[in-house]
Amino acid sequence: METTKKIILFDGVCNLCNSSVQFVIKRDKKDVFRYAALQSEVGQSLLAERNIDTSEVDSIILIDPGVAYYTKSDAALEICGEIGGAWLALTVFKWIPASIRNIVYDFVAKNRYRWYGKKDQCMIPTPELKAKFL
Image (cartoon, rainbow, N blue to C red; front, top):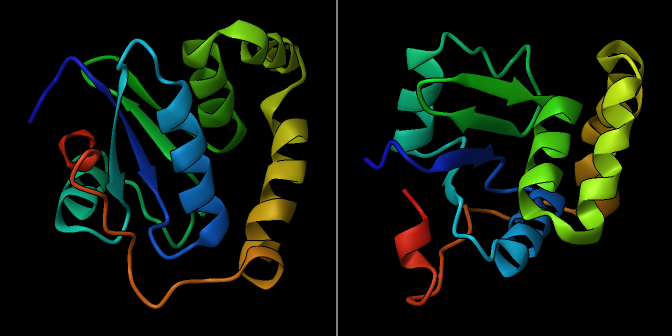
């Protein structure tokens, strides 16, 4: 597994999460990220290595190998910072304490299946995108 790429772990059956991953892929001009569904074998292994319990952390997770991992709004803002461009402006929200930012994050996460729907199985990447998925 590549250790130089940041890894985005996402809920593979969530329509909002899948759309978010597609959004990031289109804007990842520097090829910074790799992706894995939380439900996948790789995702489960990465979670276990970091002792992350997904029953307590209902979140997108950004792993910066050898540095740290980020969850919830911290992960989203770190991803925006890497995408750059106008999305870099969103990192101004880092000035707001994570406990306050995560109230909004948790509200959306709690309702994401009801609002955006859910797939029966994880997304299968197209042949062109397969190299970006672990």
